[in-house]
Amino acid sequence: MTAGTGVLHSEYNHSDTDPVHFLQIWIVPEKDRLTPNYEQKHFDLGGGDNGLALIGSREGRNGSIVINQDVDLFAAKLKKSDSVTHQVATGRQIWLQIVRGAVTLNFVGLTEGDGAAILDEGKVKIEAIEESEILLFDMA
Image (cartoon, rainbow, N blue to C red; front, side, top):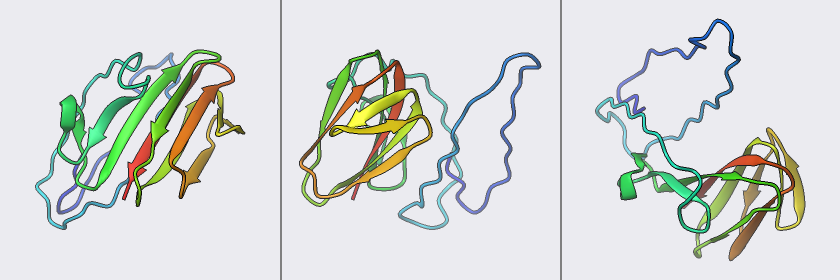
């Protein structure tokens, strides 16, 4: 969603019986007064480069949603003992959010709800301790 000149919205669980679990993530756009926009897509999180699926990017690369900022957003669903690596370009930083499960990030343990900032690393390795879902933000 691009708020543009302002936003009025709400999220709620449409089900009377099933619980809901979601994250609301705000990224400050590069420019002010953007045209309001909304995108909703389904992504196959079992594939992508090295298990990470690109789900958001500045230009909407490879069918990802458009993010009006210099950020690439990746997601992955990992089975126990699965691992993914991500090369970090010079001048970039990473935010890793653990949506579900438990992982190690360069051998440091993280669990559901944890987030970690990664600075000055050339590569990150994420290994699932149990079935897990992660979001990885690659930012300028």
